[in-house]
Length: 136
Image (cartoon, rainbow, N blue to C red):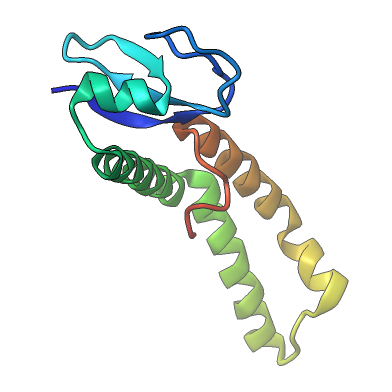
């Protein structure tokens, strides 16, 4: 059974009928594993599914990608180091009795935050999601 995987606005021609200048195409995985880009009408005709069913499959695929990206990010050493650095900042504040605030607080965690952000962006690219689509 063919499956809708998502949409792609970089491919604007239907691989079925050849219609060009589409706003986006639907990415379909055919029964034989081949990936094709169809316009919405051809996607419905060739899969035998309603637009609602196709949209539901696309949303499910996006949600699965976001969950996978989040799991990878939360397991990354950079994320764990960032959280540890924040905890260290809090422990220092409790120990000294004064909170780091403003620029000093930001500088204390800057290096760990930049490393975590670089990994977050790489993971987001890997799963083709926004870096901000998965919570930390």
